Image (cartoon, rainbow, N blue to C red; front, side, top):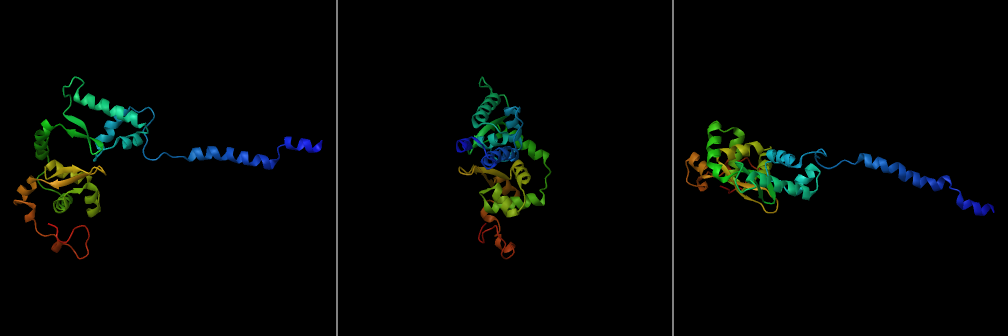
Length: 225
């Protein structure tokens, strides 16, 4: 009779594994931290996308935007479609001087083609005539290494070049040549405006850079022009 009652009694050793699981579960949940910035749950998705794209220097993928907002990819995709329709006008009439365009697998704001000349002239008039040392160095990197991406320029100069690249684009000294289909990175090159400013006919007339570099300095090929 005594042996029959033993299986019905829970011993302390039997209870320990269950207690351990119960104690660890809330601790694990409490320490989980989402990766990357997450928008508030009640955020207006369309307005949030506008805010993110307004400060982005490169096209942003739907997946990247969804991760930043903490929203499902289909929700972000539908919000982008609504924004495009709003900017273009539901009746086919253009309502904005800019457009939301997909380039290289990502989305970015662009001035509409019919306003390119107006905006370019305005930017050139607003900017001072002299370039900073940082802008001149960045321009040299683009001139000698084009086509080149923003990250590659930053790697050579060992500094962030986002604002400088925007300045050079605004001056019309460099331009976006193409977007890498795999990485989505925009590659830049110089324009005819630079040739006019330097008084040369082609980049072949640029002096060799190798004699100006210290021995062992990395970043440029020896025979690059």
